[in-house]
Image (cartoon, rainbow, N blue to C red):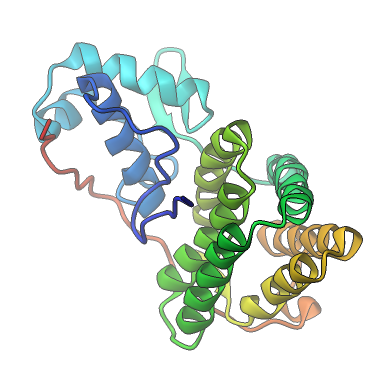
Amino acid sequence: MAQHMSQNGVPAVFRVPRASTVDLIARELRNAIYSGALAVGTQLGEKEIAQQLGVSRSPLREAAQRLVQEGLLTATPGRGLRVSTIRGEQVNDLYVARTAVESEAVRLLINHDDEEAIAGVESALEELVNASRGRDPHSIGDSDLDFHWALVDAAGSQRLRRYMSTLVLETRIASFSVPEGFVVRRNVAASHETILEAIRAGDVETGVAAVAALMDEAVARLTGLEPGALDVETVGEPHQTSAIALEPLSHH
């Protein structure tokens, strides 16, 4: 059965019956980065975060190192850890990876022709269309990423899911790294419909081309190309989160 991202969380690729404290901390940190509770560039106060989560510093350090390996946190000698920023050429590289993963997902979906899997993508698109009718940039942004996660999840490849789970977080970091604040395209659903129509038609070439075009537009927006040149409307608000708001961990 397809797994979908929660509106305020990160996709759980692997279900661990008895997650360790390190697993739980890592998940909480990823969710905090995804939601913006840990803003891009934020220095991690080890003592403060450990107290808020109700854990000791040792598992927190281990969990943080996992996120360093994933590129979500950056270690600076003598200055500790901070939430990564993704700008400029890093954005281009991020979307090269996303294009590769999502294009392959389109190919797999068409080859498998699994009606239930495709229906999951359709459901995610409906959520995006509904969100796009409003003016909440975070709701639109979450639904946008939900669609892309659903697309990859429906392809049925465990490795593609694992890669995408990190790429989704990096995409959110890139969005938060824009100096003007968190902005999204209000008419984003139309281009996503093209991808789904191509999948329904069994047209790999059109589907892959639609993915590439969507990624190119995102790179142009995130690297400073004037939005008007993309013929899009944007809504947004500066991302000003500075306080860290984490909930105490529960193992239940």
